[in-house]
Image 1 (tube, one colour):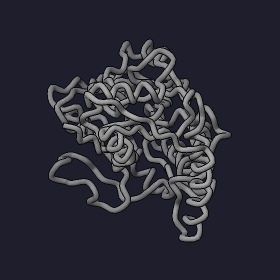
Image 2: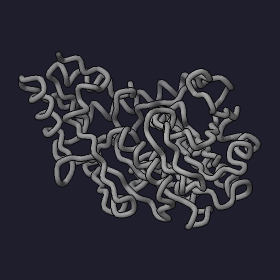
Image 3: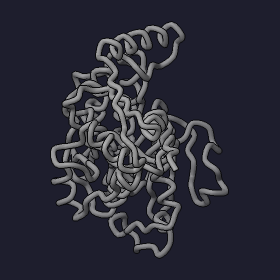
Image 4: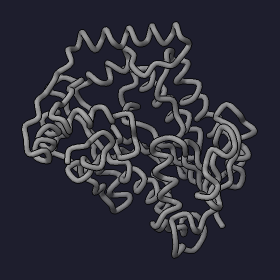
Length: 328
C-alpha cells in the first residue's frame, strides 16, 4: 500500500485530517499509486506520523498508524518519516513565540529540513505544505515572515512534486483558541479586535481537510493556492458575523470594540511577561498587527479550477457547533 507521511497530527488541522483519514470518508489513492479503497479514507494507505513521544496517538483508535518519535529538529526522524513515502503532508508549525527565532526554528528551518529529507529519501513524492494566508504579508509579524520563509524553503523541491495551500483563519468545533470569542457571541457580545472596516476570509476545518485530501488525489499545484470558505462577496465584516449570531439567538448582538491602543499595550505587555518567564507569547505586537490588518481576504479561483471543487461549510450552519457557543 502507498505511504502517506504526516507532520502536525496533534494540532487542530492535523487532528481533523487524521480523524477523516480514519473515518467514513473515501480518499482516491489512484494518485498515490493504489486502487480506490471502499472503506475509510486511510483504508488504502499506510499512515506514518511524526510525534514527540511515542504513544501520543491512541493505538486502539488509529489501528494501522506508524508513529515516528521525533520533531522537525531531528534529521534522522525526518528521514525515517518520509523514506519511500508516496506523499507527505506538512502541517506542523509554531503559532506562538517571543522572538523571531522561535518561529523560524520550526516554521523555516524545520520545513527546510523536511524538504531536504523528502528530496533525499522520497524523490518524486507529492509534498504538500499547509501554510497560511499570513505568508502574503511577511512584514506584519514574526509568524507571517516565518510562513513566507517556510514556503521559500519548500521551493527546494521540484515544482512538479510540490503543493502549497494557504488557508486564512481556520475555525471548527475542536479548536479551543476561539472558544471565548464564540462564547461571548452566544451571549450577545461580539468582541471586535480589528478595525470596523476590516475584511477577512474564514474557512471551516472540514473544508481544509477536504482540500488536502483532494490535492492528494489530483496532484501537485506547483504554485501556492489560497482557500476560503463560503462568505459574502468581498470578504466578511465584523458586522456580518454579528448579524448571523443575532439571527441564531433571536436577539440583538452588541459590538464591543477593543481600542487599538489597549490591544497594542496588551501585546507589548504579554510579550515582555512571557520573555521574563521564558515562555512563548501568543499575543505580541506582531500578532496585534495581524489582528488590526484591514485586508485578510482571499479566493478559491485557482484551487477550484485545479480540484473542480468549492468549499461548502457555511458559518451559519457551523456556528452552533463551535466551542463556547451555548445558546439553546
